[in-house]
Length: 68
Image 1: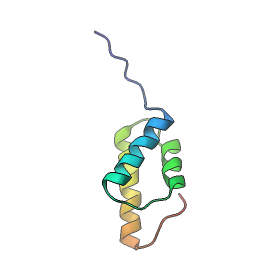
Image 2: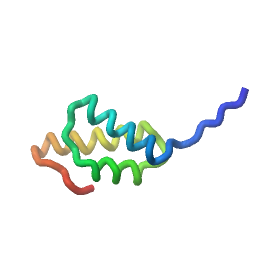
Image 3: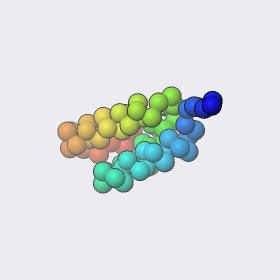
Image 4: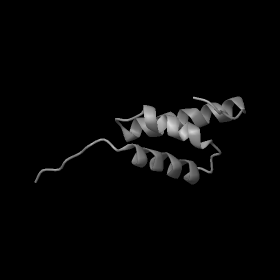
């Protein structure tokens, strides 16, 4: 049995980010998610790590991030 494991496409990466934001009740602008989904292409774990760091920074600094 051969399984083809490929990188997630843009739409999948964006959906993963949106689901994570909803699941954690985070408030983040759509363009931030789009930028992350565009720049992080290889790894879902890395994708989730980036959104976690962005949200931690936003909460730590107590200011809304509107540009990546």
